[in-house]
Length: 197
Image (tube, rainbow, N blue to C red):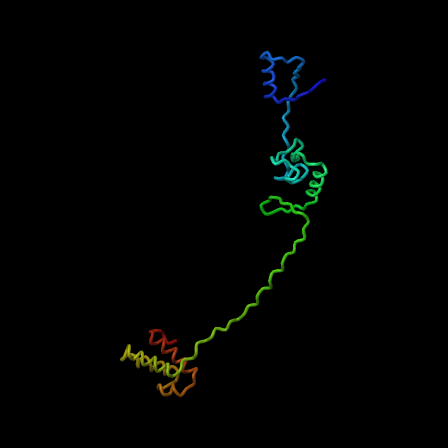
C-alpha cells in the first residue's frame, strides 16, 4: 500500500527533522517534489465566488472561505439536494447594484411603488388690505401731531392739502374716501419727516 502525503516546505522541514533525530521512519520514502501553494482565485466581485454566487449561510461555511477552485467552502452536513436547490435559487436571483457598488440579491418579487401625490395647485391667498383711513383718523392724526409739535404741524399740513387740490380740512371732509386715505398716508409721511412724494 502506498500513501502519498503532500507537505508544504515548512511541514517537510519538520518531518525531515523528526526523522533525522533518530525516530523510526521505516518504510517512509520522502520524495522531493516542488510544492506549489495554490491560493483560491479572488472572486470578481466582493462577496461572490467563482461561480458568481453570493455567500449563503444555508449551504456555505460560516468562515466565508473559498476552495482552491474559488467557490465558497461548503457547510458540513448539508445534503447535496439542498445545496443544489439553494445554488439554483442563487443563480436565478436578480442582482441589484447599489450606488456604492455593493451587490445585493433579491428574489423575484413584485414591488408596488406608490404613486406620488399630485402636486398641490398654487393657491392665491388674498392678503386683506387694511381699511382706508377715514376723516376722523385724519383729525386724530393732526390733533396728535399738534400735541407733539404745536408750531410746525400746520406748516406741514397746508402743503399736503395743496398737493391734493384742497384749500382746507373742510374741503377734505367733503371728498371721497379714497382721497381721504391718500391725504392720511401723505400726512403720516410728512409728520414722520419723510418726503411727500
